[in-house]
Amino acid sequence: MKLFIGLGNYGDQYAHTRHNAGFEVIDRLSDRWHIPVTRARCHGLIGEGTVGGERVALIKPQTYMNLSGDCVAAAMQWYKVQPQDVMIFSDDIDLELGTLRVRPFGGSGTHNGWRDILLKTGSDRFPRIRIGVGARPTFWNLADWVLSRYQTEEERKAMDACFARAAEAAECFVLHGIDKAMNTYNTKA
Image 1 (cartoon, one colour):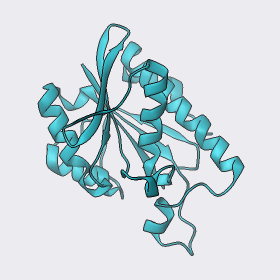
Image 2 (cartoon, helix red, strand yellow):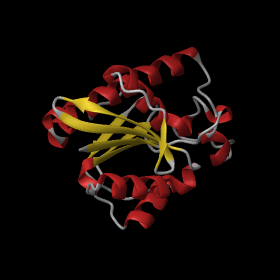
Image 3 (cartoon, helix red, strand yellow):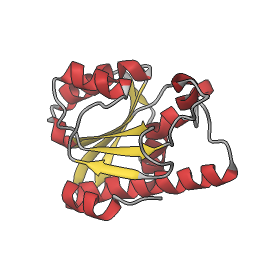
């Protein structure tokens, strides 16, 4: 069993913001794998299916970003999985817009959602795909930046392509493992 959890904030006012990059990838996986993400469970919306013979669950936490650990911990307990079976997608302001970073584990960096996950699960051993949303301009407040939408058509197209690559990387993770996913998808935009 593999869990795929996309970090974000629920509600229409947060749709398609930089902080909701994880939700965008879950939406791509939902379409790609024909798995609707509609059932409420574990502080999130969940859809279940099978990919390459592996059972999978797609999850969008319905907590705010800073409480993402509630959903991740509850889902791990419900599905009885270990951290290495939970791939998490998140935005990253330290990566250039449209860049992916696939990693087998890591720390929280400056991301409050990750900080809460590590605190509430007691582990940092989660495979993850960090999605570059671009650095905060000096005149922007950090919260305003991550809750902003992409400014230009070029940015929107770059991010659309990035979300599609993240979904491909997730499928590679299911079918071939984290090393193959890293070797194939750790590229710049």
